[in-house]
Image 1 (cartoon, rainbow, N blue to C red):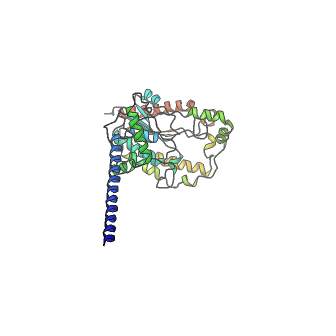
Image 2 (spheres, helix red, strand yellow):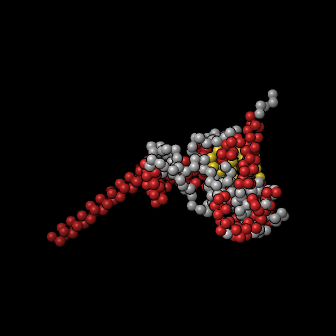
Image 3 (tube, rainbow, N blue to C red):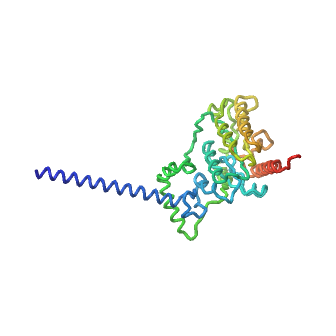
Length: 346
């Protein structure tokens, strides 16, 4: 009998310990989630209790949450590193529209569409949009897979997705980092307009291995198309068309096909060139869903496409090409605005 009572006592002790452990675990879990939500580590605006309208220096994948909701900017540039060198301050000076760079390196249509949606949720009537469309938009897979990790949860309109996203180790690290950063009297902030100049990094790479860069740049692409981007369907164009159809009709939109060095494009008459043309036509067709849109096609064969001094590789170019391209984009935007604001004939 004593043994049986002792066993029951031990079982009761363990059950009590398990309940206590569970309560502590749930409390810690709930406490961290509440803290992370209130701290809002990436300044997404879901909690403004500790918002200072900025984030500490970090990559654009997360910094875009703060930049994309900043009311100081009413124009935005989307894409990846192939449109990254377009300086928003240059566009702003030429158009009078305050632009933010929301391009994110190594992203594809799914990520870029998520960022476009985020910007539109915070700027329902933007003054202008610039969209960099490259080969990644030609993907045939309707799932629009992304190649690199991306925090879709951070830009989701679903609060539950956002809360689940907060339960990650990197987020916990950023919560701690942001608390220290908020308490600092001399805090460094990420650049508000998102401009990130990659030219110095490529120059340093060239200084270490110029032969490697030259070989990469001058190696021509095959004549056969990439099966993943050869069509015949281009589901990203359908997603783009739906996005543009939902925009206010008076918003100017410029689609930019970024420059590509001649060795990086399909030779005329090849199957690759035909696939590239088909994808370009699909994107132009998507733009037709919006009444105030125009294309800047810097991918087409131009004298600059044959100048190796303007390119680091097939798709990353220098300031000497980025600046005139920015001016061309600005002139196109100004032309669209003039057309919009032109009085109708009686």
